[in-house]
Length: 396
Ligand SMILES: Cc1cc2nc3c(=O)[nH]c(=O)nc-3n(C[C@H](O)[C@H](O)[C@H](O)COP(=O)(O)OP(=O)(O)OC[C@H]3O[C@@H](n4cnc5c(N)ncnc54)[C@H](O)[C@@H]3O)c2cc1C
Image 1 (cartoon, rainbow, N blue to C red):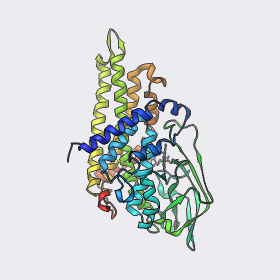
Image 2: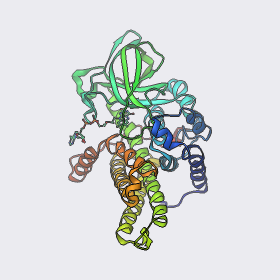
Image 3: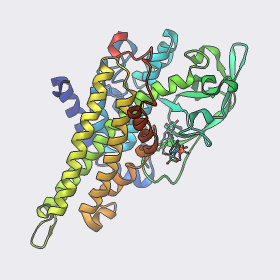
Image 4: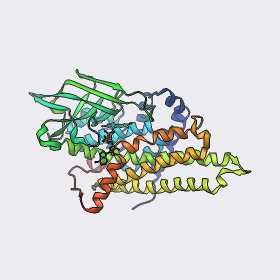
C-alpha cells in the first residue's frame, strides 16, 4: 500500500481547501441558520472538475482515482457536510453507477452532462416504509409497450429539489422479492413527477433533502439501468461507492473538529493556563487525532482496493462505520472542549455535531454495518466478485 500522496493529489487538496476557505467558510453559518442550499456553488464545483472526479475524461469527468475522490470529500466536508453529501449522491451514488451499469447511449445522454456538472444526479432508494430493509420498498414499475409506468414515493432523498436526473428503484416483479427490483433513470421534467423538501432537519441544514413522488410517470424502456431484476445488485454496488465518499467526508469532519478545538485550546485559559495544558482536554484532542488517523487509513485502504477494481464491500463498510462514529464522537468532544461557547452557533462545533449524526444513519446505519462486520468475521457473509467493479480509468 502506498501511503504517499502524489503531487497532483496534494495540489487537488490545496485547490479544494482554498475553494472551501473562500466560497464556503465565510457564509456557511448563515446558510445553515437559514436552511439555505446555494445552487450557485454547483457550477463552481464543476469548474474545478469536482462533479466528476472518478469519471473518465471521455465521459466528461476528471479521470482521477478513488483516493483523489476521498481527498475532495475530506476537504468539502471540512467546510460543511452538505457539499460533500452533494458529491456523494451526484458522483458516488449516481454517476459512478451509470459508469458501471449504463449502456453507451445512457452514458452519453446522462453521465456526460452529470460529470461536467451541467446536470445534477440523485439517488432514490429509501421510502417511508423502507430504509435499511430495501426489499420492503413499495414503488412499482409496470411495463407498458415501450415504457414502464412508475408509481411510488421516496423519502429522505438528498438533492430532491435540485437534481435533474434520479436513479429510482422500483419493483418490476414483486414475487421475486429483492430479485424483482429494477433501477431506472428518471428525469425531473417528466409528467407525474414532483418533489418536496423536508423542513426542520437536525443537521445538514444547508443541504436539500426531501420526498419524491411518482404518479403514473412514463419511463422509456431504454431508461432501465442494467437488466430487469438487477436493481438490488445495482443499489448495493452504488452504496459501495457512496459509503466510501461518506467515510472520506467523516475524515474531513474530524479535521474540522480538531482545527476548531486546537485553536480554542490555545485561546482559552482557565486556572492560569491555556486549556490545552489540562490533561483531560488533551485526552479529547488525542482521541480526535487517533480517530482521524485510523479513519483515514481505513478510507485509503478501501480506495486502493477500488483503484485495483477489487471487491471492497467489507472494507468500505468498515471504513464508513468507523469514520462516521469517530466523527460523531469528535464533534461531541469538540463542543466539550469549547465549554458553553461550543453550545452556541458563535463557534462552528455545534453545527459539526448536528451534521455528524446523519452520516451515522444514511448509507447503512451504524447497526447495519456492525452486523455486516460481525457476519464477515463469523463466516455468515461472503461477497461474490461483482462483474462491474471496474476502476474508473479502465473504461477509458
Ligand atoms: C440527511 C439524510 C439524507 C439521506 N439521503 C438519502 C438519499 O439521497 N437517497 C436515499 O435513498 N436515502 C437517503 N437517506 C435515507 C437513509 O439511507 C435511511 O434513513 C437509512 O437507510 C436508514 O433507514 P431508516 O431511516 O428507514 O431507518 P430503519 O431502517 O427504519 O431503522 C431504524 C433503526 O432500526 C435499526 N435497524 C434496522 N434494521 C436493523 C437490523 N436488522 N438489526 C439491528 N438494527 C436494525 C437501524 O439501525 C435504526 O437504528 C438519507 C437520510 C438522511 C438522514
